[in-house]
Image (cartoon, rainbow, N blue to C red; front, side, top):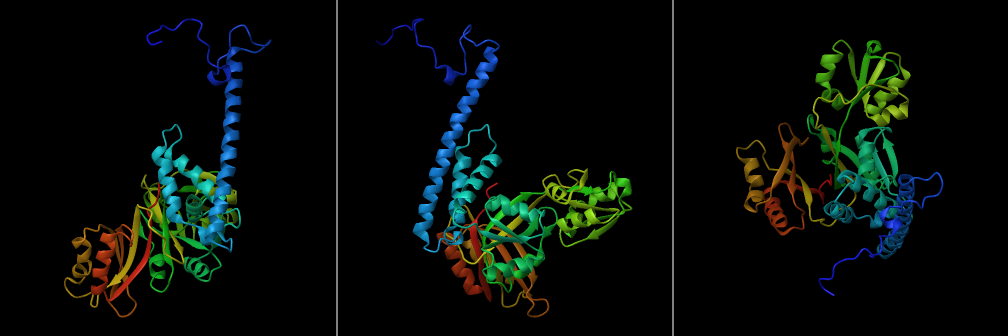
Length: 393
């Protein structure tokens, strides 16, 4: 009845659920604290069993999705970056802790990666060798259940994807402190590949070598971008040491392993791979040093709801006064936000340029579609390089 007072005869909470043990009931040598810990561990084991069951159930549904989309059974045929971005955003939205958003995103990325790889793993080419930040970007975006293909140059990554040897490629496009990777931009002038996604990776640089201290360092090897991102630290700590630019940080780590007096700037992963000692940690000049990578593939994908579009444009005469303003005016007229613009030589004639432009939204969004239709009429060169989910974390 309503209003009745609770009595002392109420049933006590279940011991396994509460983690408590009644005083005086312990086995010899077992304290309440240790018995409670045992109950907690039993609860964790039960939760693990439920998680395992749900993971297998999810994997079975992923198999059904694959069979409904492709008779070939190839992962690339039913990989949907827009759907994966949506799953990650939903996971972050409902996250209440104590796990951080980064940890939740990584866990769900690995679940999706393993489910997708049941038939055949995706083949992803990247700027190698092993131990580069580009490899870390591959794992962050695709998870560990992919076949990663290290290649020595950015153009080779494009060629492997164009030839169908790799399903996707990952290449660096810009750094928050040192700007654009022009070689990647220039590849889009001749390549038919599309941008399918982007990855933002926090970059921590470490000094490493076989020596026990910095006094024995005669030269430091690293990618030119890494040397530039650590210029201030090197000027202050190793002003007399030669700086040698190499094709990748991992190549620098390999030289540090094999050459007396050579140190490298690279990632922790590179130190582990090449058996090097960390001599100084996090030597980048900017604390928020971040590199953005592009995922390239052979087709455009549908909208995810939070997207970015990249365009390649040019006007008839880029030297003419107001040419760029007239070219981009439709974006303002349709209230489409431009977030980035870069110019590169067109290679058609001297002082003629093309423009790489990032805008918010997907080509299928009505305001974007209307703006691009008007822009295309004004451009002498108009190409949609990609319309893809914006980076999730």
